[in-house]
Length: 245
Ligand SMILES: Cc1cc2nc3c(=O)[nH]c(=O)nc-3n(C[C@H](O)[C@H](O)[C@H](O)COP(=O)(O)O)c2cc1C
Image (cartoon, rainbow, N blue to C red; front, side, top):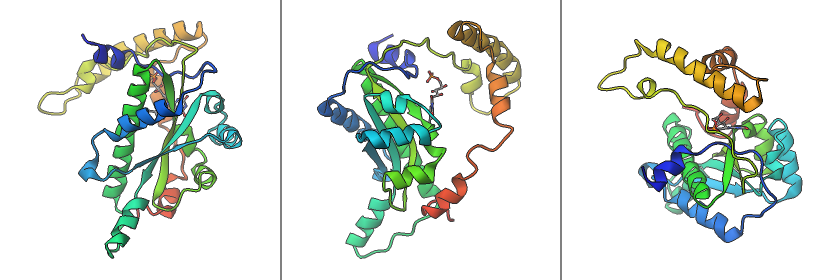
């Protein structure tokens, strides 16, 4: 259709990178693209920590559950939802910020996601590639300590970026009728449509793994959602000053 649409529809996560560095001026240009994203009530609640220290990178490999690309990617960025600076600016005006509302948590987290995806797309437009790392929430308290995050700041996810050394096939997405509804929510045909989609996902895994994995989407999701993931998150967020009220 056009270059931007082609770029967006061709994206897939990349976990193998060449040794080529990403120059700091390029990285900063990507961050400016992140900053250009819309931001709830102009709150600008995203802070990015670029992790350059090799020792910290290696620790993050372990803290993310052993994901080696956290160390091997040219860059590893940690995207934080940050309400700390808002507390500071309230103090600049001799007012006391009321924090801990679920709404603030949502707006800050949404800001981070919009910012990060702009970074990812801009990176892709320059021939770079990457993968998000939600694994930083596996040991989120330790990650927060490692990066010296104050209260009212939490790491939402990480992002590996680098020049790609692989070109994975794009992962098939749900059929449009499942994700696009008109005028009201209706899911009457979704189970049937998802069963059809399952065959496509199974085929995708079969071809990508040489037949060693053949799970369907619904199998994958139903295995995953029968247990609680990262049960420490609620306590952690409370400790950091998020989601108290
Ligand atoms: C917030 C978020 C966290 C993710 N965390 C990880 C991760 O820790 N490790 C990983 O290898 N992939 C991670 N991914 C990548 C997803 O697994 C991937 O986007 C999904 O399987 C779809 O594949 P695709 O990106 O190639 O289309 C994450 C993606 C998102 C959006």
